[in-house]
Amino acid sequence: MGLTRYMTGVAMAALLAGTAVAQTAPPVQAPAAAGSLNPAAEAAPAAAPVAPAFQMSDGILATVNDSVITGFDLRQRMLLLIAMTQVQPTAENIPAIQQQALNLLIDERLQAQELTKYEDLVVTDEEVDQELTAMAQEVGATPATYLEFLAQGGIRPSTLREQIRTQIGWSQLVGGRFQSRARVSRSSVDAALRQAAEAASKKQYLIGEIYIEASRVGGQQAAVNGATQLVQQMVQGAPFQAVAQQFSAAPSATRGGDAGWVVEGTVQPALQQALDQLEVGQLSRPIPVDGGVYIVYMRDKRDGAAASLVQIRQVMIELPETATEADVAAATARLEALRPQLTCETMLQRATSEQGLLGSDLGEADVQNLAPQFQQVARSAEVGSISTPVRTPLGVHLLAVCGRRAGGVEAPDARAIENQLFRQNLATLARRYMRDLRDDALIEMK
Image 1 (cartoon, rainbow, N blue to C red):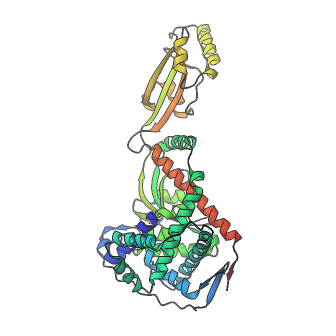
Image 2: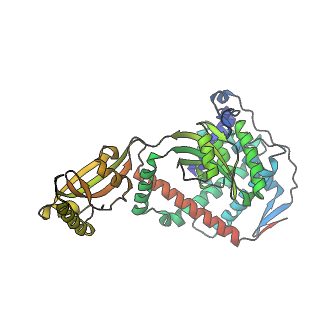
Image 3: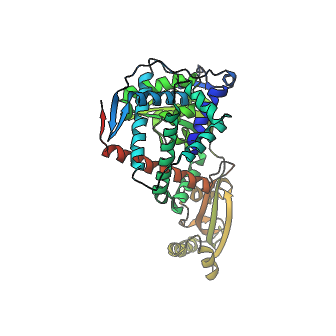
C-alpha cells in the first residue's frame, strides 16, 4: 500500500501545490521522442480539479457475480482516475478512461468478493483512516483538506475510502498467501548476479514503462489510440508515475512504471530501437508490439562497465617455455585426469597434497589485467567451472572461475537483486490470482 500511497501523493501534491514535473514538446533531432522533462513547468500553478462533464446513466452497467456496477460507480471511478493521474478528459480520451475505470472496478469487485472468504482478514476503519492520513500528510494537507479537494472534483469520500479498504485487504491477502512461494532461492540470486555481471559490458537504460494491453481495452487499435492520448497528456504535464500506476498493465505499474535498468539486446526490436533513439528525460511515442503498446520514459542511460572482475584459483604444473612436447603432453594429461575431481573449494587443498602440483588463489582481478592466456577463460567460463589445461610460459594450468561481478559503483548487489526477484515473483502470482478470479467469474455487461 505504501507504493500506491506514494504515487497517489505525487499526483495530489502536484494538484494541491503545482509541483508536477511535466513533459514538453519533442526535440526535432529525436523522432522517437514525444517530449522531455521541463523543469520550468514545476512553477506552473495547478487549478483545483473541475468535475468533467460526461453523461452516463445511473442504472446498472455490469454485474460481477452477484455485485452490480452502476453508472454512478463508474462515473466516480473515472473522476478518481482523472484526479490521481491529472489526465485531462477530452472527447478523444474519455472512452479509454471509461474502459480503464471499468476494468479497475471489475478487478476491485472481484478482490472484495475474494476477501469475504477470509473471515479473519478484516480491514478496519482505523486502518483506512491511518492510510488516508498518511496520504494527506505526504502532500502537506490534513485528511479533511484532502477529501475536500477531491470533493471539488465531484469525488465522494466513500469512493476513495472503499478503494483504500480493498487495496489494503488485497495486499494483505496476496502477501500472506504467496509470501513463501515468492521467496527467492540462493541459486536464483546467483544466476541473476551472473547474468548482471555478463551484461555489465553492454549499454544499459534506466526506464519507466507503460504497457497498454490490447485485450483489456478493445483491441490493438484501441490500445494505440489510448496510448497516443496518454502521451499527449503527459507531454502537457500529467505525471508519468501516476499515469503508469493507473493505466499500465505491466508488473512495474505498482512501482509507478519503474522498470529499472534494462540491458541492450534483452527487449523486443521495436523497444530497442526506441531506447537507442531516446535521450535522457525524453518520452517515447507509442510503440506497438504483439499484444499491446508500450510508452517508454528514458530516466538515464549508461555505457557498459569498463571493469569485469573475476575471482580465479588455479592448479598448475611448472614447465619452462623450453619444455619438450612430451613433457607438456604428460602434464596436460595429468591435469585432465585431475580436473573432474576439483572444485573451487577443494582445488587448493588438493594441490598441496600431491607432489609436483602448485595451487594459488589469484584473488579478484580485472579480466583485462590477467595473463592473455587466462582472459578467455575468465570472460566465458561459468562460475564454479574448471577449465581445460591452459599452457603459459610458466607451465600448464587448470583455472577455476569462482566469482564474477561488474566493477565500479554500478556493480549488482545480491540483496537488491533478491528483493527485486521477490517483488517480481509476488507480482506474477498476484496477476495469476486475478486472472483465475476473472476466468471463474460471471461478468455481464448490460
